[in-house]
Length: 188
Image (cartoon, rainbow, N blue to C red; front, side, top):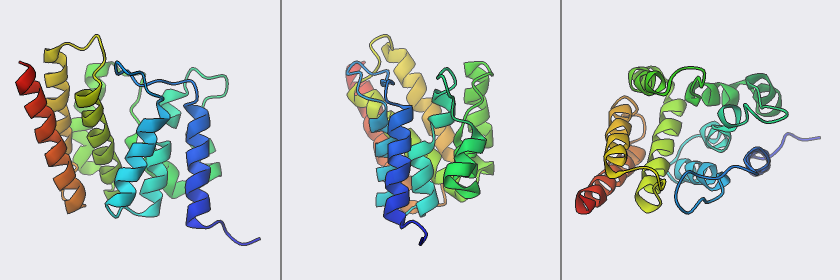
């Protein structure tokens, strides 16, 4: 049997992510299916010239983090077995340690951003772009204006350490960041 095509690998990762996130919803007021987020992250990466492994990792980037309470949580070892060391490694670099307090995790993202591989930097930047779009279009109902401003500012601080690998992604982040800040300013 010949090795799977890039398209087959991509669809396999999309189906895997869809199954993991089948019952998950975004925090936004529209409560859209969570899988929409990982699809958007992968799309951003693919449209901006990221390598195939980064696009695959974009689809899978929240599977370990968000399946911790599932009957069969996704483990890093399972990602290695299913998608290989490279993809699993990128996902690992993009995964937060949920055992740490939220503020510690956020501070670590800012500090560790410049130390990530190029593929992980692109993935994290695409993730932040998707999250900023969501915060602007459909913020969580319980997130007051100040919390959204804080989130957008924090995303900007993380992005500083992620930039320099993919100029097109850098430009898209900047435009998305400016749009989010402008929307927040108009709401104030």
